[in-house]
Length: 53
Image (cartoon, rainbow, N blue to C red; front, side, top):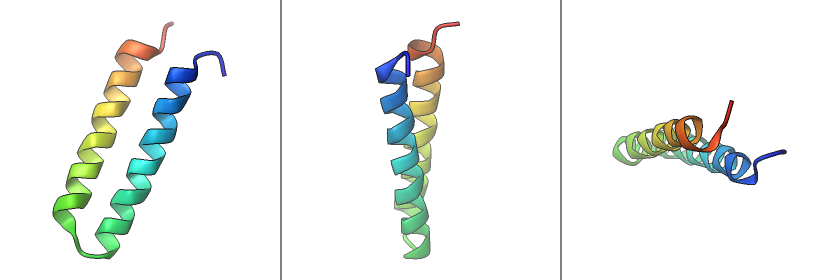
């Protein structure tokens, strides 16, 4: 756990994926799509800004 912001971003991504799966089971596909999109944006931000090689 060298970078706490990168670790926090992963926690947010997991929460977004979980919420999207719940939204899909409730047949709320618009919300699920937005949550999956948000998770993708957080992943992109984490990989490009927070993780140093």
